Image 1 (tube, each protein chain N blue to C red):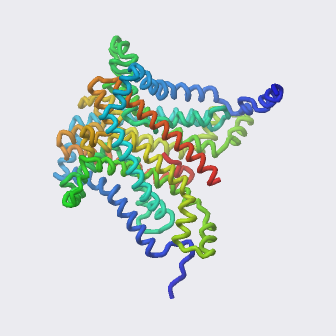
Image 2 (tube, rainbow over the protein chains, first blue to last red):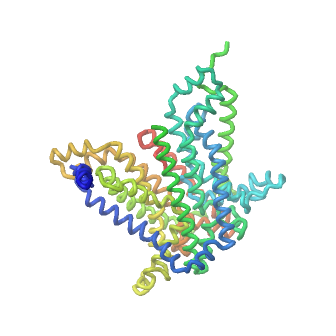
Image 3 (tube, one colour):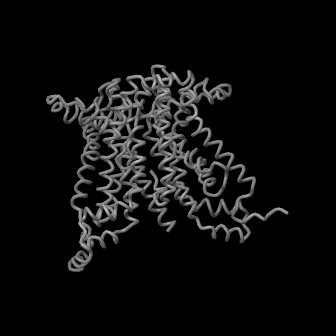
Length: 286
Length: 280
C-alpha cells in the first residue's frame, strides 16, 4: 500500500513537468509578494482588529439592533435589485443576441455604463431623478410612492449597479446555444413559447444564477451610488457599508472591524457559491 | 403572401414587445441618469460649468485623480503581467486558488477596502506610531488614496490576461526559447504582441475604476479640499453643500470619461473579438 502511494506520488510529481519557459521564480515571487502586501495582509487586519473584542463585545457591535437593520436592508435591497436585473437582464441579453434593431451597437455599449460610470456620479444623478420634484420622482409622488430617501431608492441604485453582470453573463451562453435543439423542439411540434420555456430557459439556468449571484454580491458591498439616494436614516435606510464608516468616524475601530468581518464572511460565502455554480455550469454546458 | 417564420424565430409581437420593454428599461435605468447629469450641469449655462470645472479646488481634484490613476494603473498592469506569466505559462499546484485570491478585491466592499488601510496605517493602526514618529502620513493623505485605489483595481489587468494567455498556450514561447531566445526577448517579441489588446482592455477598465473610485477612497481621504480630494469626492462635497451646478459639472467630466471608456472598449472589441466578454 505504501509503495503504491509512493509510485503514484512519483508518477505525479508536484510540478508535472519542468517548464521550458523561464521567469517562473521571478514572476511568481512578485505576484505572491504584491498579493500579500496589498491584499492579504491588510485584509487580515480586519480580523485581527475584531479579535481585540471579547465575544460578547463582538456580538454587541456586529449584531446590534441597528446593524441587523442595516444588514436586512443591504441584503434585502441587493436581492430585490438582483431579481429585477434577473428579469430584465435576460430580456436584454435576448434582444441583443437574437434581434436586430436600429442603434443596437449603441445599446450594447450602454449596457456597460455602470462599469464605467463612477458610482458617486450615478448616486447624485439617481438621487436627483427620483427626488420628489425630480424627472421621475414627480410622477411617483402623486401615486404615493416615495423612491428617494427611502429603501426603494437603495433598490433603484443597486439595480443600476448590477444590470451588466446579468446581461454579460447570459449573453455568451445564449449566443453559443446550439440552434439545432430549438429546431428539434419546433419540428417535434412545440410552440415557440414551449420551446423557449422548456428548452432555452433551462439551458440558461446556470448562467442566469451566476449573473444573479454576481449582481447580488456586488450590490451588497456597494456604497457610492447608494448613499445619495438612500436618505441614510438609522434602522430604515442605512446600509451596512455606511454603518462601518459611521463607526470609523466615531473612532470605534474595533466595532467597524466587527461589521466588516460580517460583510467579508458574507462576501466569501457568495464567492464560494459563485464558484460552485460555475463549476456546475461547466459540467452542464460541457 | 406572408413569409413563413423560421421555427426558431420569435413571432413579431414578441419581438416588438421584448424590444420595447428592453429599450424602455435601459432608457430609464441607464440613459436617464446620464442625461440628468448634463441637464443639471448646464442648468445655468455653459459658463457656470466652465467656472465650476476651472475652480482651483476642482483643478486640484482633477490633478489628484490623474496622479492616482497614473500610479495605480501601471502598478496593476505590471502586476497583472507578472501574475499572468506565472499562472498561464507554468504549472503548479493551487493555481485556481491563487486566481481566486487575485480576484478577491472584487468581492470586498469598497468601504472595507478603505477600512483595512486605516487599520494598518491609521493613527491607532499597526504602524500608526512608527509613522507619526517619522512624520509620514498615509491615511488622510495622498499615499492612502493611492493604496486604496490599487486595492480596488487590483484584479482588472490580471483577470483579463490570465485566460487570454492560457488560451494561447505555451507552444510559441517554447519554440522561441528552444531556438535560444532569452526569456525577456521571448516575452517582448512573442507573448506581448499576442496579448497587447487584452492588456489594453484591462488597462482601460482599470483606469475607469481608478479614476471613479469613491467608497474606498472616501474612507482614507479625510476630504481635505485642494489636498486629498479626488474628483468623485469633490462631487460629493459640492453636492452636500447644495452646489448642484458645481457637483454636476465635475460629474459631467466623469461622465465623459465613462463614455470615452465605453467607446474605446467597443472599438477594442471590434479590433479584437477575442478579448470580448471575459466579465469584470
